[in-house]
Image 1 (cartoon, rainbow, N blue to C red):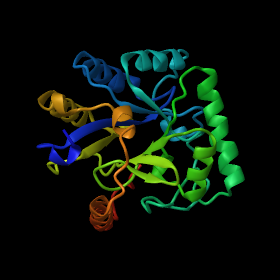
Image 2: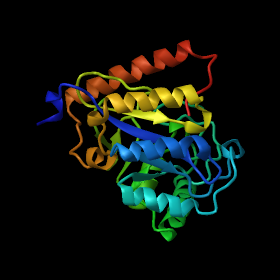
Image 3: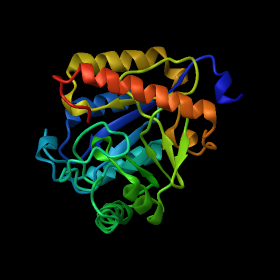
Length: 256
């Protein structure tokens, strides 16, 4: 059945900021329950985390062993930048956050930086051809660098269906909460490090109620992209709506 005939939106579960010193005490019980329900996720793995804000708990020396177990479960690994350190104020193509590890830098810098992260993950046997830009910030040079390095797509973008940009596939990611548009795909962006226990419980309860509607990121990213007029209109509408929503929340913490 084609996506446009879906009665309900399908959900993709995305976890950002997977790193050696993350909030393991919150994440692992949640991840274990998801695995028991057969749910797979797209996990943003930071190759060499240098962001002090992400040092939440004791560092796990078996970090990449854990990542390999997740791959065996069927989870998708997306390279979440390289160091997760922002040294640019460019908000990139999506215009979400005025900070970036990649956007605003020359192609040569981005190619070297993304390549260094890929080398780390490849050496550990956990690299997959998907990218998750820190702060949702990437530009055309980022896409060119990723394409040159063999990446196939990103977990980011507007709309409800995968679409293409400079030879890569973008699987839209709009909010940190599920959106039921009645069609397409909604990627739920989760930052466990900053989540209160009550928020973790609410997320888990939602997944339990809707477990049959959660799908695999890789299978969605591997679909033919939707680049027609209708899909472009949906991207424009969601882009405008989300930017208006964020402008009303200017006093809140920025989207990560």
